Length: 132
Image (cartoon, rainbow, N blue to C red):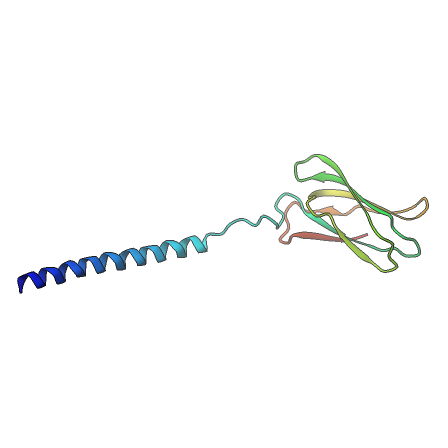
């Protein structure tokens, strides 16, 4: 009978250790799950631009953005866009801007539209939208 009590006590210790391990593991997993990882997409040093352009009577052929990128260097981005009779939006995917930028697009031969929005360094969303 003494041996059974000893075995029973040993089993209790093993079960207690297993329970403690499972609870500790659950706590660690919960803490890891609540750690805030900074967003890679939301801009903290420049923004991708979403540019809504208005074709009007003409047809844009190329949109150009010139300004300061996230590294503080002057940069130029451009994209050829298809003809459109309605307002359309293009995003400078992978290109980030901050400060005042110059946006230019052609609407007809030798006719251009420009705008100069100021892009914030910090923005809560992935894209900063402007109309030009």
